[in-house]
Image 1 (cartoon, rainbow, N blue to C red):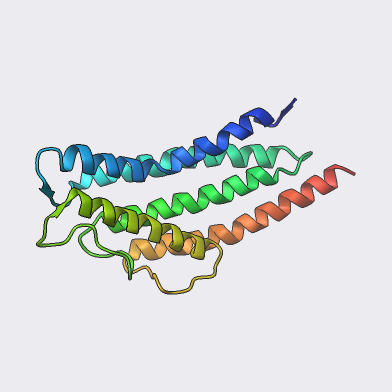
Image 2 (cartoon, rainbow, N blue to C red):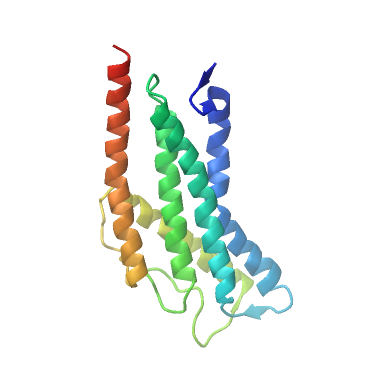
Length: 195
């Protein structure tokens, strides 16, 4: 039995696939640290801008395509309310924005967010273990910031500093509110079409 663009069987496989898509920035940054940056030298400094730009492009575009498929399926199927797909879309939005925050923080020697560690110190070189530890803290802080921003809780303990970080945080707040509207609209559309 098929609904919209995705069958029920396909929906169950989409969740791990979206998780993998959303982990692209972390995995590529970790691979870069291990393979390219620290392969020949125990100590290393900041990567080239093209490396971070590539991670940002693929880390943002690939999950966005998966998210587009989810939304297209949800909005076309007015006969079934798909709470698992809505939850998957919401989680994907959180992970996509968290990846964006993390990429912003690791892309510069200046902080993009307050209270987040800086991965690349200006006059210091670090070992692979130092970089990996810093990367983990940055990605966890980014996930925390994304959850508090998309739910519009915003504790204020981590705040955007750079103009691009401020725009991204504001966009996530708007998307979070818009998502609730889309979810409610989809629910009422299903209710109306079942009559």
